[in-house]
Length: 602
Image (cartoon, rainbow, N blue to C red; front, side):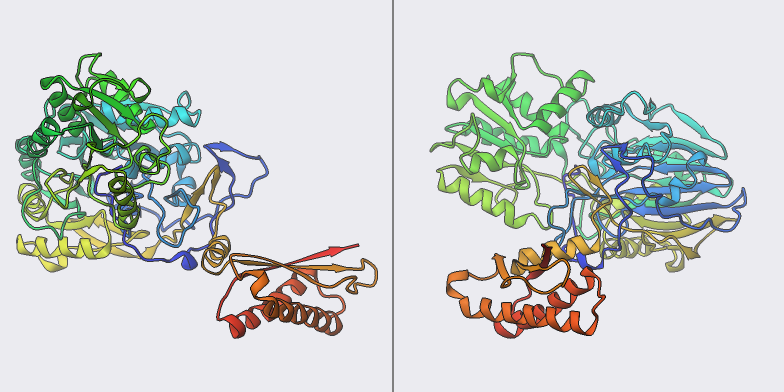
């Protein structure tokens, strides 16, 4: 996951449009009779000299990065990512892009280009690749390694087609669209920007980037000469990362973080426990280098940490002697010579660091003298979870170090001076800020104006908008694609919609009330007194008066609806009773629990 994966914390669960039925589970179809997905009506005929650009994700949030480039009958997709759930989405694991538009045109998809290996750029692949007809995937070597690992977990590795390219040499042809690449720095190796040559003009998509003159060992700096050469080729439009557009200055170098980490690790009196994103390969390499230099051992804790290290080492992106790094189940040796590298820098509920803080980790128990270093910035919305973990660790006697006390983390995204440098190098006629919330992209627009781009040539678009490029101009089309949130809940893909989220939120806020009505199957009269069961609503023994009133209201409501409408459907009866009880709970307790009437016929 990108290390600065921010989320704008606005609850819009009740505004989530209904999702399509769950006809795919873990990438495999559940039934040949499953409902067909919603079809977007095809737009007007697309001329071969016009390029249409359609963001399916990444422009109303930081995540779900997916952008469609369509020229005539040729479609190229850049990135296919996921997003972590927002507040107001209880139980949801991930959000993935709505690809209905692509599904109806899957025979025209020439390829999917992936800019780097973070989940917000590759996480949607295993959920969506089959629905898109398994188009070929193109990426650099390390990115391909992470994609393959995901596909293996879904049993799709043999059906997916992954092609590895060399960013320094590759030129790929996708019908009318030609793609070339340039290296950029990010918080993971092999991050690339993309140059698309089309009949409508040259387009640059930066991916996530920063400029780091001194990246971690064995990682290449951004190729400024190559980027400048692209800028001299008359670029029509620059689609540029906006994640850190509000941050002044330049992004701190990764090597500077390593220099700050070394004395902390060396001077630790007890064990050093470092929580970091598992994809921060450069950071991990610096920890390994420090450990080797000072004769310490590194123990890995957390599945994603183990997987990332294994993939990166097998592909040559991490280098260390075999006896330096071990799995956490081999933990041992002097405390002062021990480094534990773990997941959980965001306070994730089941992460290794959280389990350590809750004294639930099988191998790691905090003891006085341990130092916990959180080498990551909090994702917006995770602050409370991280604070809870830090509090618990401190109570157990650990010394805590994080980015609010020392510079132990740097972003993988360019700050304002980096963004201005990219504009200066590419020299685009048009600027289209991408990646992030609207206010981030608006800040990027201000930087573009500062760099001399005309206000009317900086275009702010949102997911589902359609840009049309041709004849040396870029303009937003009057057409727009309707997109929905596609929610992942366990093995279910797209089967969680507005009503379920509404019910989950009501239960989490005010509990649930189950109203049990037993009726005669022939006469439809009540056979016994109504029974009420509540959870998270009121303590039954102390609210007998309220419960008794609810029973009377439910009985009266049942009598009313069946008398007025003798042939009323069971669903209508339950809805009528629920509405009456909802008013009672509001009047009596000012609460709105989820009310669930259950009718049993005997």
